[in-house]
Amino acid sequence: MGAVSAKPGTTTAQPAGYAPDDAHPGAPASAPDASASAPDASASAGPAVPDEPARHAGRHTADDPREILARPLAAGSLLDAVRDLRRDVERTTFPLDLPGTDAARASRARLVDQLTEHLVPRLTELSAPAVVVVAGSTGAGKSTLVNSLVGHEVTTAGVLRPTTREPVLVHHPGDADLLEAHPLVGTARAVAHDSVPRGIALLDAPDLDSVLDANREAAHRLLEAADLWLFVTTAARYGDALPWRVLEDAVARGASIAMVLNRVPTASLPAVRGDLLARLREHGLAGSPLFVVPDQGPHEGPLEPRVVAPVQRWLLMLAGPDRARTVIGRTLRGSLAALRLWVDELAEAVQAQADAAAQVGALLDEATRAPLERASAAVAGGDVARGAVGVRWAELTSPRGAIGSAVRGGKVRGSARGRADRESAVGALRAEVTHAATTVLTAAATDADADLRAALAAGPAGAVAVLERWALRSTGPDGASEQAARAWVGQGVRAVRGALADPSLDKAAAKRRDKAVRVLGEEVVATVALAAAGGVDDALGTLTTLVGPAAQDVVAELRADLERRARARVSLVRDDAAAPLADPDLASDAASRLRLRLAVIKGLT
Picture 1 (spheres, helix red, strand yellow):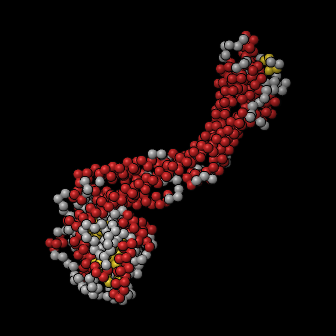
Picture 2: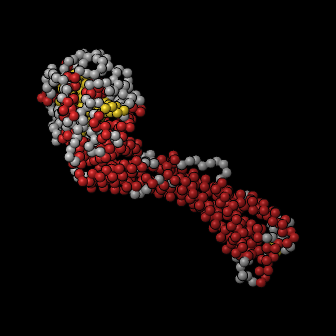
Picture 3: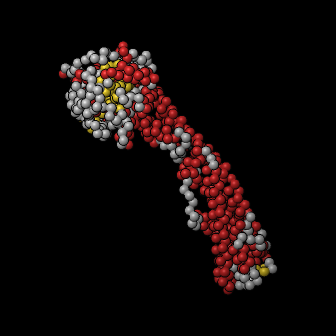
């Protein structure tokens, strides 16, 4: 232990409140009386140095390790079910930032750690040693305690913080094969030492309140690997809030827990021990073993064997086949039982996400209605014909214009010799129609974008989360609208070709139609149809002169097509806004996957 400044004491560790074999450390029980359960503070337990046969007799060697399960024959199926649950929990995300989502994400991360670090490894190798994680706050003396229990310096201890940067797993050499596949071997530095009883492995974890984020995260994750928590605190810090929050989580998941109260001044030992026992009762830890280590004063290196003898004897007892199996089985059953509430809560959080997504989808549908109606109204109201299109039409239909000079008084005049010039002149109108249609389609999308953003901003938390993930529209040219407008203009030729091929026209109308094609060409006739569909007032009359009664249907078809494209632009904006809702974890049945996995585990336990 690093040098400390405290009143020296010479008494040994005092066990207070040891749980009987059949007591669940996390279950309420009658709290042991501090004065009755602890030996006299001045008594010495003497060094705990077991003889060599006893040291090697502790390996968990039950005839069938599956007997620690409620249904031993289901061990293989249970392992598969837990692995399936871990896979689905790992894949579970919370795309929407709702109230409680941060807590759900943290709970999911802890559940993944519990499944990965404890349940899967334990079910994979039920004969593996019981993992005793030595945990606590900064400066509690965890590393010194581990070194003292082993009798050698296997982990770094000192006054500089943090001392435990790398977790250390200490085990008996004979248990190496059983730990070989355990994930702890890849996370912690494994040390084999003969002084560790077979059947248990001590893990010196980083500080729970370390100044280093990585250390804190590692400490909390490693606690999930424990078959037993040996929680170390001091007389000065046992009231800190963080350790008790961690212990409450351990109780909730059914972990087996013991506590070491370190550096207790002799004078205050009864009061401190009594207060701590009361706190243990309040937190559902009445049956948990409590060891009191009196203050040893300024000190370097491991503690004297007599000081930690009670803890050492207790660990040796735990290493026995029956005791190890009891601890492993108790924590394993507690962890499996805790899965029910844990996964249920996680499934509820997933369902809350799905419900919020459905609510946002309905909100977007409602908010899209007005932009759709305005898009239809813009097409029906002739917005394409406003401005440059109307001016160009008037120019072309004047007596000397390309169209006006060829179509007058309900007749088609001229010859094919001027067709190329007419097509060139009317090409400017087609360009204006294309530009105007692009503007109408862009306006429909922009209008929808503004409405939907306003609706999401004023909506519930799920709506705001979707809004935050929706990228802002570009302020430059709208390529999608321009592409849609060009496609609509291209429909003009295809629409008039049907009318030009109508065999039902009378002879005079058919003759006029054929001449229109020779004098103007299909492109010019199609442009007239587009202008009429866009809302140019007298374009329909001109088109009727050119193609006959079918002109009405051609214009109606093109106008309906433009309206569909305008509404499609609105719908596309809605789809862009709703893109985050397509996440599989927001599907209406997303939570059922987790509930199904839990049902399988329930059936096997």
